[in-house]
Length: 287
Ligand SMILES: C[S@@+](CC[C@H](N)C(=O)[O-])C[C@H]1O[C@@H](n2cnc3c(N)ncnc32)[C@H](O)[C@@H]1O
Image (cartoon, rainbow, N blue to C red; front, top):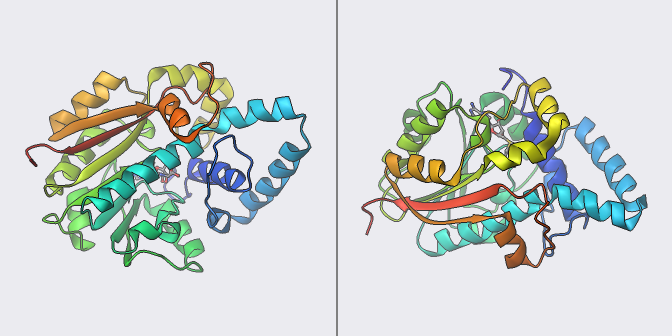
């Protein structure tokens, strides 16, 4: 991450969600009606241009492009379903780690009784906050917490932001750990476990090494130019071991193919989304 520049990968993901909200996706039922309002002027112009090109494209070619983008709407829907379940089970605090242009606090009515914490790198968060000032949160309370996972003590930041470690929390960690070193991953997982009361759930999205190849040279090059290199592809057994070592117990680990089946989206094994996964874990010793 560049110190002073908001994350460009967060903007990319938001652009894909905005396209999907306009129906430019092969994932049925995807909605994110506020995300376009969080885009910068440049990214908004890109949205208009790309949407127009996609609509004019030959249908077979468009289907191939949308398949390449489907990992984002698929993972969002998979996380939303898990999050609704966590809230129904009693989590009254929700924390989005590396929130980027996350819109859950502005669109998910199921979160209306929760205290929502948006945790992100200070540069990305400052931009997000300036754009989100025009939106009305649907959650009971929204708190922004600036944190650099590579440097800052997350526990201290959470406490001073009003997070209650004695109340259950649903932790969302979406599209972030692939940008983090092992040290940052471990320190953050430990801090989350320490701040997790019984009943807390961790929803961590990660990418397996096969996704590295599917991303292609151009994808990696762009991530490097943006100073957001993908350094953290991890195998299922590695993520499981990391999460359990920190003090969580894994409940389930699903992948893009499962989500496609769940939401009635097409999915070929060659889909670049293969390799995207969601591990759901609870605080160990909570039962
Ligand atoms: C690809 S975006 C994902 C954003 C959002 N979670 C989503 O899925 O739409 C990656 C996010 O990770 C955050 N991030 C990357 N490195 C970070 C770090 N060292 N500390 C805090 N946040 C970081 C960026 O600011 C950005 O918001």
